[in-house]
Image (tube, rainbow, N blue to C red; front, side, top):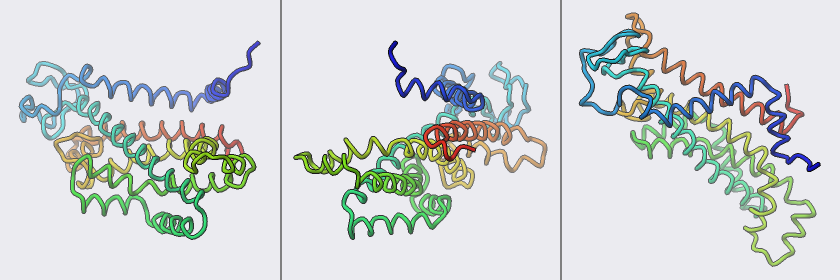
Length: 292
């Protein structure tokens, strides 16, 4: 009988945790509805010509002028809130994944490069990383977003700058532990270029902790984007990210129109918590000593 592969064993152990399995199912479902938003959403919240101001701030279950029922109500611009949340999920996931991927590439490259070079260059790079880690990520992202202005490219730049240091520190710690091992020394004695040794031999052994950090940082990037958009320095109001949707209804909370902020907030919390639960389970399987 053929032995089970490491991936199949990992998946079998992952499924034993009902909480993590349900969280993964929620993440997959949210990603699915976000991708299918143009097919599922009864209204395109970007089509400003289709919005009717007379339908603004209507409660859940209201039948609008378009003839369909606003099951979650409408926001201050008359957008169907259910449609806006679906499109907002797309933007939040897009920002989190793109910023997380770029931060992963930049941070891992710096961490591996510092561990490989050693000496003063390693100390210089890591002191800069340590200096950045001394500042809260939200503060750095807030300052950069205010300086760069609103827009997707500007927001991604701010998120990457606020998060790459976490990947760099993790990659450097894992690579430094691998750097002195015999198999690395043997690879360095071959004619292979140094960068090939790093990415072919050292990086694969550093991936488990980096995957855990990547899962957490994607959730953090989504939360940071929502916070910046809520504060008005993230995405513009014409793009209904979850943070912007919460901000649009915040001023109406005391007047009883809770649904404008509550429903996008619930969607944001469910997404972030589900991703974090999946990351916790991956962390526990990668390093059982950290299991609670």
